[in-house]
Structures are given as C-alpha cells and as structure tokens.
Length: 457
Image (cartoon, rainbow, N blue to C red; front, side, top):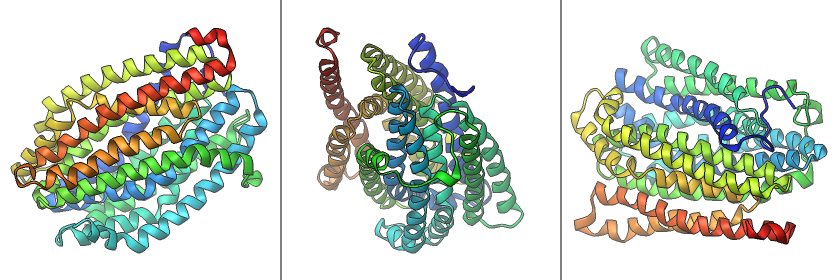
C-alpha cells in the first residue's frame, strides 16, 4: 500500500471515515474557491453585472461537464472493487483506461463549450447586458476543460485507493495560484471576467499535472505508466456501466438547474447577482456534505469487493449520521451569517443582498436533506448499482423540479422566488426516502447471495 493510502477494510470505521473524509472536504472547498475567487474579485473590482455574468454560466457549465464527470465515478468504483478483491490486473487496466477517457472527454467538451456557449446562454434567457461577459467566460473556461477532466479522473483513482491527502495538497497549490492570478489579471490588465476565467484555467492545469505525477510515482497497482495507456475493453465497459448512469443523473440534475436559472434570469440582473452569490455560499456547504457521498462510494466499494457486508452496513449509517450533523450545523451557520457572507461578493447593491437572503432561507436550513440523498446514492453506486439511483433521482429531483416550474410556478400568485426555491427541499426529501428503501433492498440481495446466515443482519 502507498504511504499516503488508508485501509478501508479494517480498523475502527468512524475514525477511518472521518480521517478519510476531512481531506476530501478541504479539497472540495479549495476547488470551490476557484469559482468563489472569480466572483469575489469581479464583484470587488468590476461590479454586480460581472458577478451575474459569472453566476449565469454555472448551471450551464455543470450541465455539459457533469455527464463526463460521471465516468470518473465509474473509474473510482471499478478501482475500489478491484482493490477490495485484490485483482491487481483489473486495477492496472482501469487506471490506464481512465486517463485516455479523460482526454477524450475534455476534447469533446472543449469543442461543444467553445462552439455553442453564446447560443446556449441565449436559450437560458440571459439578459443582453450580461450575455457578452458570460460568453467570454465560458469560452475561456472550456478551452482548458481537459485539465478538469484529467484532475477528476486521477483524483477519483487516488481516493479509491485511500489517498485523500494528495489531491488536497495539489489543489492547495493550484488555489493559491488561482487567487493571485485573479487579482493580477483583473487589476493590472483589466481583463474583467476573461481574467478570472484564464486564472481558473491555468490553476486547473497545474492541479492536473500534479495529480498525474502522483499516480506515476505510486508503487502499487494504481501506478500509472504513460506508455501503457490504452482502452482496456472490460474495464472501460464497467466504467461506462457504473459511470454513465451517474453522468446522465448529473446532467439531468443540471437540466433542472438550467431551467431554474432561466427562471431566475426572468427576475432581472440584480436578482441574478444575489442568486449567484447565495448559490456560491451554498456550494461551500454542499461540498462538505458531498464528501461523505465520496466516502460512501469508496468505503462501500472496497468492502463490497472484499465481501465484507457487515462493514458495508455500518458504513452507510455512519455516513448518514455524519452528513446530517454537518448539514444541520453548517446550514444554520450559513443562514445566520448570510448578510455578512453575501456582502463579501456584492458591494454595490443592498437589494441584491436581500435577494440572496431569500435563497439562503429556503435552501440552507433544510440542506441536510440533500446530504442524506447524496449518501444513499453513493452507497448504491459503491455496491455497483448505478442505474437504480439514476432513475430515482431523475424522477424525484429533476422530474419534480421541472414539473414544479411548468405548473405551480406558472400560476401568477406563485410566480415568486420563494415558490421557485421551495422545490429544492421537497425534491431532496422525497428522493432520499425512496433511495433509502432501494439501498436496503439492494444490500440485502448482495448479502443473501453471499451467505444466508448474514441475511439476518
């Protein structure tokens, strides 16, 4: 085992889970700081319209990127299963299939993002005074999206192997570079949103190079040798089988968010600015909870591969308990400190801050429900069942939100921001309950197939 890797197959679970998850939380926070630094710098030096321009790209960017990010989930689960069952050949082939997949994904995304940014933003009813800046931001961002793909695939492999510290170190370095370049490009060269997009691209390139070098330095089955990269069919098919539903789910989630962003755009650029700042604050809360989703995927993946199902069962409930505690505490703090946090992003519009508080009031406090939903999704994927959570999530989250937008939200008396945001907690709660039932069913099928005696657990 590599010196930075942590065993998921033995030892106290709670301690191992927390030790494994904390670096993921810190890493995710740093990754989110890329976009936060963009918003803060343009808000301080360029005004609320520039904040709205960057914020307007978020849902659309996620729509395009999340499909391919799902394949990195498939790579991580495949590696975790191989490590748990001690099939080194499977791990080797998966690692050397993952990087070519990342490269192809990045090229495809660059072509789509650069070619169709303006058209897609117009479809979202982006205001005319925001559209040119949003288009420039997206085109520069997607010119370097291959770096993002490489980082996500390689980081997924490292985490599946138990190493969550290396991605933290690499993103720390890249994050510092990003912030420095943000300020430099905007204040010295006056590049506005183009400067922060370029800074983000350069910093993502740095993190991609570092994470590839980390895999090349490993001494176990996860060691990457560039000359051996190719598409190994069995591992590629398993990555697709697990990752494709995850990618479809992520993209469909983003479609619902694009529709919500279009609805947000209908309230004007001041409202868009407040919404963008609030959404960025929520992002910090979300990644802290989503870290337990990643932990559930990898701990359950390795233990399922090793047929240690009692340990799988305990992992599920520990992650659910942890994500509830984190979600409730951080959600409450985020709401109570909302005005102060929003003022970091927005300095020229008290009205935009008040609009941001509307969003925080409807999403921050019940945010733990989203964490519960994500952990059950991760647990199902760790067990190799990726299609089931996709169907449940698509119907429970996307279906409900889209239906809400085109029915209740269209009624004049309910065409309000409050009504729009209320669709979030409702979709989280319903989806979590159905996911939990599905998880228990899938788990018991695994246990029953292995040993009738364990079925009583």
